[in-house]
Image (cartoon, rainbow, N blue to C red; front, side, top):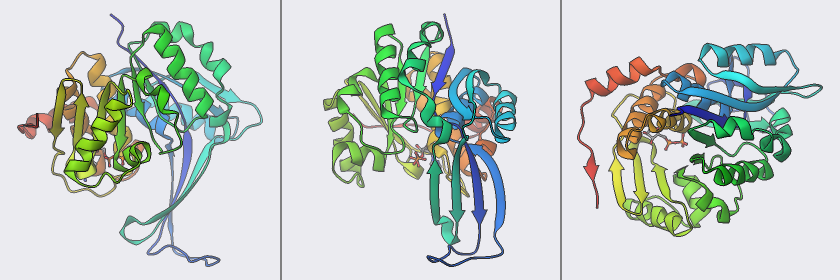
Length: 314
Ligand code: ADP
């Protein structure tokens, strides 16, 4: 049986500046510190799934700029297969400018660059790869038409899909039945449901609304509150692990990547979600996106050190 995970999505170079405060319009704040890291939701989830033990094949478009070789090396070092990471001549790799001020407040600007060169016809040519896969993992930093082509092809092949509708952007809800697992945080759920998801009752209502819109299984991630799981015969809240959070960047990406690795091993959804909560809890105790992603051994050690009983809501 195949355990291959295919992740199709974005790959970015992040330029991160940290200072005591954010600048006002037209102002220059000096004395910042600078870090360059690799990010993008697709790449983050691919790295998280591979470090969690998955056999991961990443599909993305990057530029032919000086970042491309280092980016591919970072993926390879994490154990991700890069055979389908396409270098686009004359284009720039997706980039994110991140400014962080006090209390983690931030300004972020993203230039999709080569990420938007991933087009539906390229997706259709991936059929042989997808035929060998056990799970397709998608996010929403690619063109809508490319995302829909992925969902259509996976559906036609009967391939299970974990779709993280992030960031929140207009999405044709008629595609929800073509997902297998829909992972959203509170604000992404709000953008789909049209009401604030800010109380336990609203979480249950939002999960039900997403099931009613045709999503077969919903994972509503709740930051430090954990995750709420809902499907036809399941309603379960998995609490987050209590940790000292220093940087929650990419918590959702680590959650989705680790979840994918656990699901293809055949773990039942609640156990897979608990494994993903452990991976993301570890990641929030560390700075940065990809550098904070734990490896399998760390996740297992963390889990055995934090034996916790799941609270079941039926
Ligand atoms: P996103 O990054 O997409 O906004 P969330 O903030 O909901 O996603 O986080 C995803 C998962 O990461 C949560 O379900 C939880 O398991 C874990 N997590 C996030 N923040 C914390 C935290 N402060 N402490 C422990 N776990 C956390």
